[in-house]
Image (cartoon, rainbow, N blue to C red; front, side):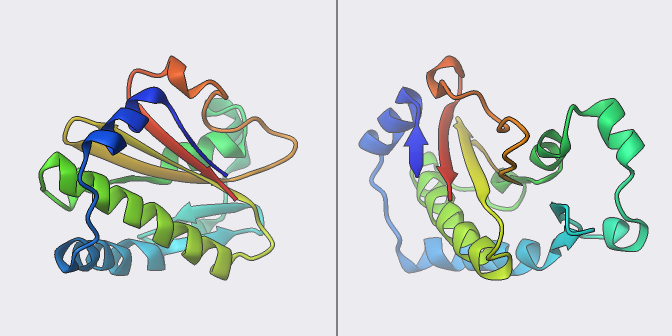
Length: 160
């Protein structure tokens, strides 16, 4: 289920969304760098693990629960992909790339971890874009508040 706040809705209505070759190529380039680092750690958390820290050392639960209230908060913090660190484009292209990345991330997570439910959030604030994800756990609240209009940034959430 996809939902968004009024700021994201306005951006989408004003943007000329385009999935031209250059947009798809940039998303594919990003995906090829980042997605291979997404790993299931201790059958408990799905994390970006680019330097194999978690695969080699496992999760430090004492640290996690001392800094974060739960695994969802930990994943939401660590699983942060800032597109502007990799791609510099105008806002219209950034919106298109963000939407395409959310779509590809959903397909990837569903394929690699079919027994898990996920939430992907995308935030657009000027030329800054972040895409985050976490496992949905029945025993823990989500990464974001239910009322997305309470946020000052444009937000889109995809729960599946």
